[in-house]
Length: 206
Image (tube, rainbow, N blue to C red; front, side, top):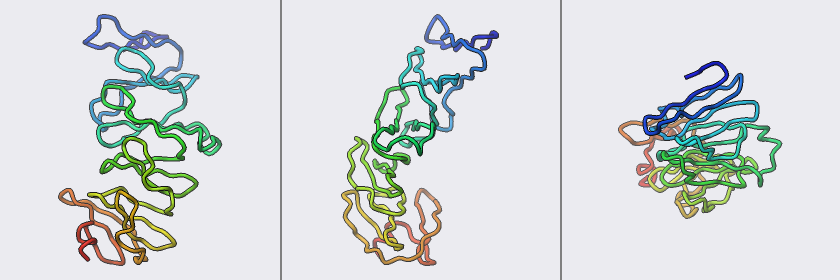
């Protein structure tokens, strides 16, 4: 509710509203597409404030993007001159539904969603993977990478595609020259590789 210079956030679990003051301020809940989360955010001239349902700030104030993080999380990425921030200083947060921080990734330029308990991470325009505890299990060494799919990931190196497992071992050599699309049907991902379509299991079998 707005009363002029303030925004009041009401929660049925608490007697008093959270009061956000300041002109030209905007507040919003996390997009319901991501799930049901117990936190919200607002923007002012200082940046993006991310608060739990008690009105407590759960992240340092900065300019953020809030995006789907996979596995019932929201991914929070800085949007302030990302190219000008040294890689070692960049932080990417994954927040749980209850507004606690599940994971803070450091030292990567970008990170994807949690998929198959792995996260695709980019550093210096190369891709690798970290696990859900933030441990780097596959060093950034690939020009392109797809998310893990039932324990395996399609990756590109030296203009050819192959497949690795969660330990980073190459289980299908880099012999495929063309991969340009993916589709999903009945919960299975289908990959277009060298003008044929495969699920990951079909690719392993082949």
